[in-house]
Length: 229
Length: 112
Image: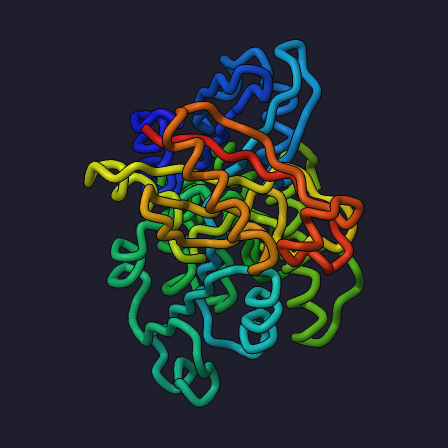
């Protein structure tokens, strides 16, 4: 591998951007395709598929046999609300491979006893979110029901292009939320990206079941971003 | 994500490869490109080797690293990449310890 290719690859990884290294087996020619550059590449269909599955592997292509080394940043989950559903969601998200952060300014909720071994901030999202530099490979989950806590974070998550943005609340609660976000100048297209009511419709009742529904919806958003759920 | 992904949270092998090459060391990178059966490391796993035989990472959890390091020395010298195959049907593979019942194909290339 040429050093400039390796350097470019490491720069993409350090910036938490996806990239695929294409190695043509016969002859050893290599090129780096960044996530943003996939659509301009002759192998775009297969690159897109590999990017979504995040799996490296061999492919037969018009260029011959190529090996695709897929580099996708580890996904993160940021949750507002140190609530009951979050207590169930944290271990599920961890097992699924996410780095989880919880934000809740209510100090009675955000305690290490309720949330051991997790990145926990008993502060306002306005204080914490700018420091986290949330990005595309971040799932954002709003679980407080409280506009004072959730709204700012939702707007930031939409602006940051998080691959998943979900908000707890009934259809009625969400309708009021939509009005508030519109009043803040958030576009309808952006608002439409919010998954609400949150979670796949599996009839979840208990906090743990809702956490399962949320995790399933996030998984679908990560692995099948083209599917509208 | 699962173990089959290339996670930056493992020791950062590609960063080490870059740093070693910048420091003027001869460097080769080994990548697991195909596996059959119960291979201990997933496709995409990396091992970085320098000209003195120092290495970081893993392509087989210890089974064939010794053989890969030896081949890597020649790749560093020649600059030509090569594909190595280790499997249970291959007597050499038994010698290097791939008794875990899998077959792996490892690509070794020079860095720089």
